[in-house]
Image (cartoon, rainbow, N blue to C red; front, top):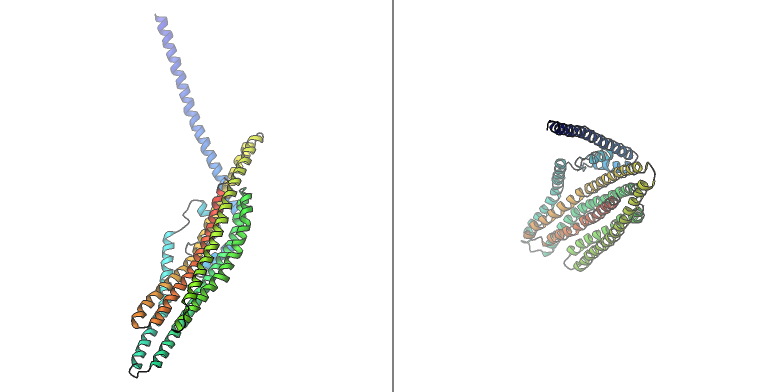
Length: 407
């Protein structure tokens, strides 16, 4: 009995010792594995950061930096972008792309500045309307109808001259904004397509390249040389049709307005259909191709295939981060380009409607109708800017998302 007990007792001791040893080994090995994994994560992160810095330094952003310099000169740098490379570093590191406090304060500053700019001239139009009524009141005592017509004509011409000056200024600003967006696209698209090529999206680049060339070359010219002249012609017709009651050009103005809408709708529909359908289909084939390449390297290259595949992942990931950051900065630059002109046009249009509403009870129906028609014409300018910027935004967004499918 004693021997059996001792034997059983010794067996329990051996079991306890074995379990203690296994537990100790587990406690030792697990931290080592965790420490090794953490070291590996740190090394990969450092290697990724180094690769990103090297790739960004090799890209020429001088064209985009010149656009930022123009924003700074005109005090319209709403997103506080000082330098493209520094902005890319901050976006990739996880910082917010937009400083909302600075953006809102800059936006309010532009709104107040434009209201202050337009108010004196529009107040002058109201003063002309008041003077016209006073002169008509004086002439009525002498019962001279020809004098009344002359007073209305002179006042209308004075208002028309003021509006011509303002419309010329807005047209110049709109043309400059279109030129700026075209310049940005001519600089931005080659960078994005080069980064897409580095990602292995060769088929997508082959699809996008001719479309991008057409967009960056001909879209701006289409709006400058066809759409903006429609606006100018519509504005001239508004002046002529309100100049005399005997001239009726409302139908012609309606035709120009319809032609304007059809041209923009047709161009936008063709662009959206061709760009999106071909781009998305090309991205799917590129994704399959790059995954096949990575699998081939990992499986069929002896010894170092896994390391080469991992290194390829790091390069592709860094390129994708840079490409998305560049695309985001491009989106911000385009939005920055159109916000100030659109605000100017919107404020001018609203103030014209306000002045038209003030003049109507005074009996200046001709001037009131003219200002209302000019207000409607001005919306063509904002439509041009919105449509062309939207096309550019869609182009950049599709390039970003299409090549993301590759990874």
